[in-house]
Image (tube, rainbow, N blue to C red; front, side):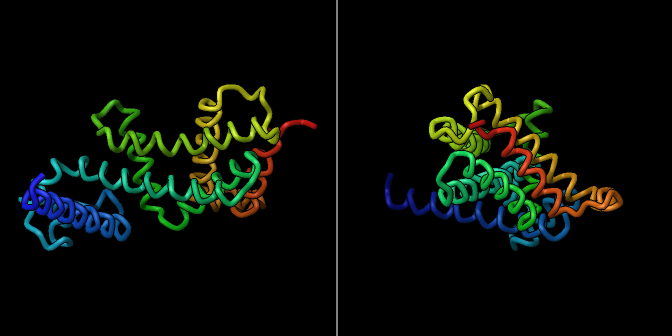
Length: 211
C-alpha cells in the first residue's frame, strides 16, 4: 500500500471512530431508541450525508457500537480471570466482571443485548461483531476448561461451551432482574447486592468438584 493510500485509510478509520464516539455519547445520554442519524451527525459535527458513507443505517451503526462493547467486555473478562488462579475462581470473577460491566457502562450492556436479539431474529449482522462475540465466549470456555483440568470444577458438568451459554443466560437474567425488578425483590426483603452474592455462591456450589 502506498503512503497516500495508507494515509487515506487511516483518515477513513479515524472518521469512522469519531462517528461511533458520537453515537456512543448519545446512547449513554438519551438511550438508543432516541438516537437518530441526524443527532449523530450533529454530535460528530459532520454532515448527515457523510454519516451514510460510513454506515448504511442506524442498525449498521449499532453493530459498530456492539462490536466495541464486546471487545471491551472481553478485555474485562481476561483481566478478571488473570487475577485468579483456579478455574472456578476465574469463572466467578468473570461473572462478577459482567455485573460490573453493566453497572459501569449500561449502554454497552444494552448494545450487546440488542446485538444478540438482532442475531436471534435472523437479521443480517457482520463478521467483525460476530467474531467479537465469539472471543468473549472463548474466555469463559477457557476458564471452565482450566477448572476441569485443575480439579476445581466438576468434570461431569458437560460440554464447556454449553455450560458457558447456561452461565451466560443465568448471569444475564440475574443482571436484568437486579436492574429492572429492584422494587419487586425489595418487597421480598432482598437487596440487589445480597441477590448477587447469593447467586454467585450458588453458582460456585453447582460447578465445584465435590471432594
